[in-house]
Amino acid sequence: MTPGILGLLLRAIVVVSGAAIATFVLLWNAPGDPAFAIAVARYNTIVPTDVLDQVRAEAGLDAGFWPAFRAWIGPLLVGDFGRSSVTGRAVWPDLVRALGYTAPLALAALMIGLSIAFPLACLAAKKPGGVLDRCAVAIASVGAAIPPYWLGLLLILLFAVQLAWVPAMGARTAAHIILPALTLGLGVAAALTRIIRSGILEARGQGFLPAFTRRGVSRRSIARDHVAPHAAIPVVTVLGLELAFLLEGLLMVEVIFGRPGLGGFLVHAIETRDFPRVQAVVLLTALIFVFVNLAIDIFCRVLDPRIGEPGA
Amino acid sequence: MRSVLALALIFILLAVLGPVLAPYDPAAINIPNRLGPPSADWLLGTDALGRDILSRLLHGARWSLGLAFLISVIGLCIGTVVGLVAAQGGKLADWSVMRTTDTFLAFPELVAAVVIAGLLGAGTGTLILALSVTGWMRYARVVRGIGLALKSRGYVVQAKLAGMSPLVIAHRHYIPAMMPSLIVVWTGMFAHTILGISALGFLGFGVQPPTAEWGTMLLDARIHIRSTPLQMIWPGLAVAISVLAINLCGDALRDSLAARNS
Image 1 (spheres, rainbow over the protein chains, first blue to last red):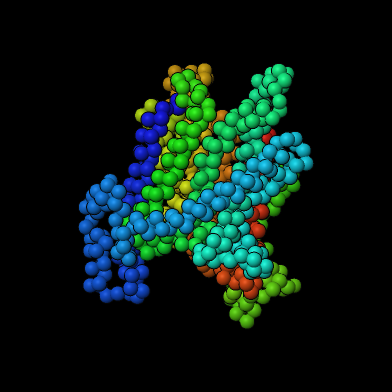
Image 2 (cartoon, chains in turn orange, brown):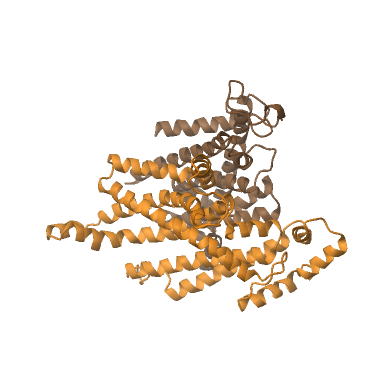
């Protein structure tokens, strides 16, 4: 059933184009006059109808669905995301600037998440059902239930308002990344702990491990050479799904902490009906998501050559 | 297990009875009493317009939990139908349905919901639409998986040979076999949807004020984080506890099903 790597690549392309086209159709069928929202965002006031018509013409909104579709998809195929309807500036450089705030936050959160989840899961898996294990699972369950935006507000309250240790809003200094990364990292840690724990337990249940012990292979070598690769496959697979959680969390956390990243970029673009910007963010998100998952699929095949073989 | 079930039941009861139990009108504005601390009269204090926070939480349960219930059931129905079509239809139906599912899955659900709800105009109707459209894929995958496994079972093949219509086969054989797994997925999605509703509410794309909903209450409370930090504790706590209770119920269900199967 599992397709080859070429098949996966083809599937990724179908999926990304599907998401992009669906967004375009949605944008064109959304209720309300987008020109009005664009004009209000551009001039900060309600404008007369002749200016509105001018805005409509500039944004290409008067052309109808198919001409607009052609005008969008043509340049896109050669990598041109177009210009913002509100500011008139090219979308791509602004998008890259926003990504420059989002990517370090995502990486920092992932690092925090992994560095909490991995030791916690290893400790928990040492003695399944023991006190440590129960505590770790309980912490993970509670962590998964806490909405990221609420956790963010609680951390702001504690560390920025009450203790005044770190700054909260904006992204002026390097220290501004601490609280949002912690907010997101704790959420990632909660989700990963359970997955890594069950991955280790499952790998440890493999029938061939006692054979190694009897042959006198050291515990360390068994853990490193035999348990770890088996545990890695489910963990890496779910890491791809966790990316969705991470991207969703980024959106919320960036809005809460007022970071000028992709989250705020998207929300502002939606509110001002800035179609080229909305489309660019949607396309970028789909691309990141699909290609990270593609990379994970390929990585899993390297770890376990049985996947993707006929009859597997 | 029992305590978790009791907690979940308490929350469901609160959602149903909330409006009866609420001591005040959740929309009654009382400016002289704004941002009041918890007291004997206002157990959890009052918000920026002097509205009773406890009453708003109790009324909000109906929106946050009730809507999540509705949306997760809609997702369940869509997903089951889609999954059955994929499993029972031919190769082409399966391929096209599963690629559509992949396309929907290729996008973080909340981001898609924000785009949909934001573009269609904020409101309860678009909230339901946005979260239903983005919340059916997991059911579809589970239903398809089990359906494909059942397809070659003797009794299903015989029912087919006996000339039973696909609808009857789905009703008699597929759906009963899928129910346990579907319920487990559903509890997960129920909890997930509670988080989604409050997230959209918090971004301003969800249930609109003055209706009390936990996410919008958090949005209101956020501005007053310095002066009355307690105000933002309650709605978040309500979301977290209800999600935790439902998730734990789901875990317990899954474990008991696994024990029964083995």
